[in-house]
Length: 261
Image (tube, rainbow, N blue to C red; front, side, top):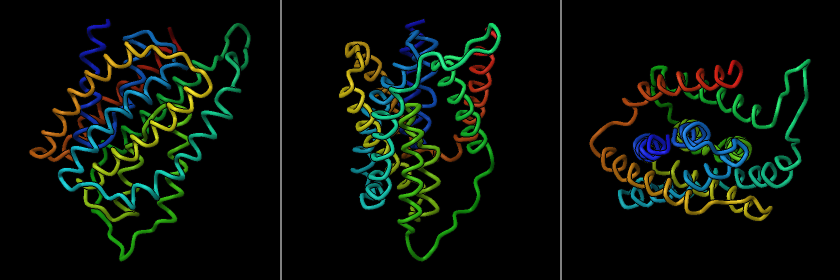
């Protein structure tokens, strides 16, 4: 299973490099089901792996001229605030066992995986549906961009998900960026959000296996290198529907596994 996990980790990087998101949607299931990591700890590990990989990808896109720093900062700064609130204040106070119904117990780990599966299904439908024509306005709406940044930070903080599937549409419609710049800027935002979230986990003393993290991240780096190179030759938007169907199946699989098995 570990070999399959390391091979699957390459796909994390490829998806981030090609479409600027989707990496964290794969990371949590890979950590939980292939590496047998506790879902609670997997959210921390996901922040490290996705953040480090996205940082590498954002540098590659910077060299290609696909980074818009101002838009990234207006998005990332509110995200940082909500991430810190969730990771430092709310998340540690959630009890391991939430409640019981008859003989069935709902745990914190169960809640994480169910919410994450719903997130996967939602993201999948957004990727499967046909792309709408880009709507350009005269000016960038920084207020709306910041508000969405705050909301994405909540997702990142609770689930360890970078939120690229939310970030890219926001950059397209509110920052008026073309697709390739939205992908590159999204990777920078993901790396900032993930770094802050992981730093918060270190502050509260979350146990970390760095040897394991670095080995998985190394495989994701390989995927990121492949994805970044392919992004110059392949239109990532054409790959989104295919990836969306894969994510949709994974989302329903997680629900079935958590509820029925």
